[in-house]
Length: 336
Image (cartoon, rainbow, N blue to C red):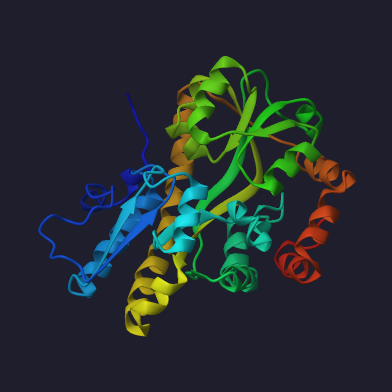
């Protein structure tokens, strides 16, 4: 069966080490770190991270070894975050929305229809908005690298019908990725939105517990949702990414030179991941179409109008505060 993998677009030598384990011949590292996340081993984030870890090992003469543990190998997202804060785990890739309870401003990237393009996303998150988010993360005693790693635009799929306007959302039984802002977005649109762990979603869609779900296109393809969902509505309702978080004590203990080496390679890898997504997302859409998924555009204006009339933008303006909202609107224009 034809299969699309984010690793397909990365050098084969990197893909072979996608699970993140150091080569057997490598000398024992003086500094041995673990890097955890919930994505698949062949996801480009993991592949590019492993590539960066290998470059770090080479540049430091084997003194720094970082091993990647994908697919929640080290525990749930919440468990990995707790391990990071305690020092049992040194590094994680973590979505901003998952940080809402600890660093509320970190989920501001998920404000619905805040960005007109990927270029606007990166202008904001490589600029003042990203700096504000990192400031909030650092204030909680967590180190964070400068570049956000792309997950991409989230789209809607449905088993029974295409979603064309905001009216089609009313009463829709929808699984939403965790995060208060994500839940509120769809409940504001009238959907019966509920969260569920990703590992259980396919079965819930197949059995009819949920009629619909939302994810980036590559996840829709790689997790085979096309088998249990017929329609894909290109809503582009929010963009999502992952921050690379580091235990602050471990980070400080490296010294400035070693910190600079790690930051150089991981920030460069984040930019390579963005280039990967330029090719992967169109390929995923083409493959999904060939597998029978029916695509349609949505009336974005109706979605924005419904969110505004529900008080969504006013609610999140108060939630994030005037300062953060002003920085967001520097890039988005006036919202609501």
